[in-house]
Length: 479
Image 1 (cartoon, rainbow, N blue to C red):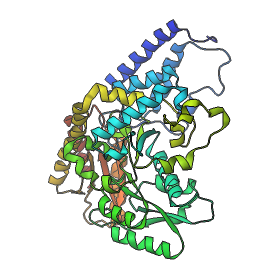
Image 2 (spheres, rainbow, N blue to C red):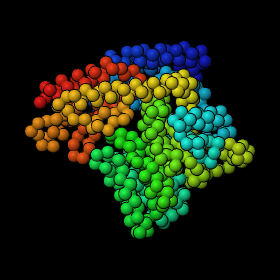
Image 3 (cartoon, rainbow, N blue to C red):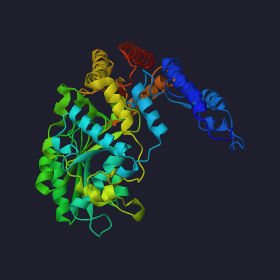
Image 4 (cartoon, rainbow, N blue to C red):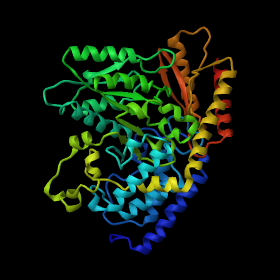
């Protein structure tokens, strides 16, 4: 077993792996949604030292069943409702397998032209499916690129914004970025990595009812920084916040940014793909007129398994200026001609996986109609769950939920807010310990809310109804 796997051996074991995955997906409801493993349990079941001699691949599959599966939280389970989905689908899995089989390292066009050019086509396809502005297309001064995550996309947007604002972090100038209290934590991490520092991440107040960023306070904070000699570099507006799917007023925020020459980054990591449905394209109001960059994640809600995040820019030049370094060993005629894209200049790492293959496979398998049907199904199921919550006197619903996330809280009569929060968290733990469903929580103001996010490809009405029945029963027993 110490020799390379032959093509025939690969064919045999590859069929075993595909069969294993198919069987897993067919029986996924037999598993508890959340792993019941305790800390260190999986590690203790594995050898402390690597094998000296190679082992048959059947041993790997056996240990997958014996050791790995008990430590898996099943994100594709139809009763997984804890976080925004990390969709996997048959065509995406096969596309990823093709990428691994080709073994492409697509750092520059010359190292595999198809890797680059297929990606440019696929991100243009996706922009068309979402009805994004034409200046995000790759045949303009802008363009799109697949990143590993929205966190990385936001980081490079921050770096591009600093570049356009006049320099680089560490040049002695102080830069600031602006987020809301509901913005994803990756923006603060991006500021730290970019050298801005967490102290120059300004948190803008949100409307207490909509939880959306307040443009007036944004403008006031920017004015204070300018007066103090700080250079505003970037504002992040969010379409579908992680906590509650609140939607920031992009157009009004964009007007503030344009008046002051500040980069507007739009984080639509979860909700952006919903614009594949024409009736949801209102969420992108203001993007065409004002956004300098826009990110959404097909790996969340568009059936393309992790990792696949797409970033578009209205002008690619600041990003390339910020990130381009050309060592001698990467010089080549194609790059020098200016006729090709080298995506290494659009991201932090040098190396690049052939991620476009899985997104290409998904779009071709489902087509626009299939993608719309999937998104609409999640929204419809969430609406039905919300109706059940709304009709029960023992629960309160956070009403603004245009997507597939429902936030709600149980009512605990006679309890203080602190005690009610503890009771809600205890209820959550009992629900998750049951293995029948998996939820998460958030906090709005000083109140803990439960979160139910629909999105797994196999989730049906019966799973949502079963989740509600379990939640209601556990709550009524606890009162």
